[in-house]
Image (cartoon, rainbow, N blue to C red):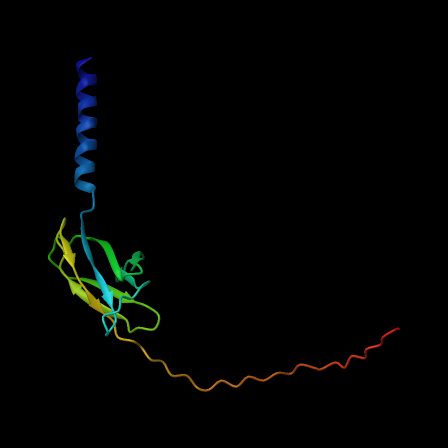
Length: 133
């Protein structure tokens, strides 16, 4: 019976130890994204470069992104992208549990395209209208 208690205690201790030390620690960055005239920009993609997930800014330009905290004191690259605006990236240092504010201004991107010519090859069919009286 004593051996079962020791084994059970060891398993519980190991599970707790593993759970505590295997959790990924996060930091949070938040802020507001505006254009050059201080107008908020909605639907801006905010993401950690090199990772598949991110968030989009709301209709007021606000965003909040949880990122992996950096234990080695290296900088993390955060990207901002939206249709009609130039892409932008910043380097930040994030320690676990910190809430960091980064307000960003994006410049409008002007893309010039060559003229477009629209043609139609529609065949016109003549209709004869017959009426009976």
